[in-house]
Amino acid sequence: MRIKIALLIVLAVFVGCQSHKTDKLLELIQKDIFNNKKVTISLSNYTTFKWDSCFVLNGAFSEEVIEKILKINYDGTATNSEDDLIIFINNSKIFYKEYFNDNNLPKIQFNKINDSDYVPYYNPQNSKFKVKIEETYNGSGKKFYNFVPIMDSSSTNNK
Image (cartoon, rainbow, N blue to C red):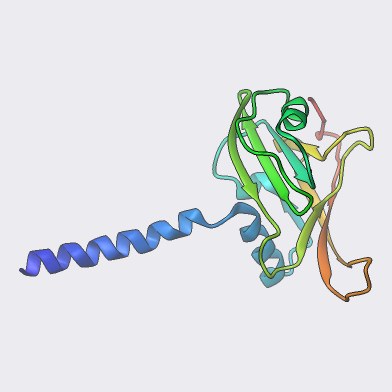
């Protein structure tokens, strides 16, 4: 009987620890900025997986348009006008995707590196951002995190 109780306790602790692995990547970044007043971040410092490109989709996109943007097969669903989606790709395959800005923290807005890009695009070398806390334009007084890319001589945009 004691062994069963001990196993149940170990199982409960293990399951409890595993729940942290389901934390959303960008929510972790939002909390880090909010709690630690970070002014610069790098996506590469928050990812525990290998990736070679990252796209940020804000708003409505059909599956076909998403495939054209990513230049690979997309087996997900279309996005709507309220969606914010980040997609990480490794070796021409979607490795990780996450809908974000669905919590009570200030929203994240990613800026493009090149104005000619259709959507914000990054790679591990150019995923550094200065975080500016700004007010929304609608006069509500709500704040958002404006991620402005930091470019240095080693940052390149190799699509």
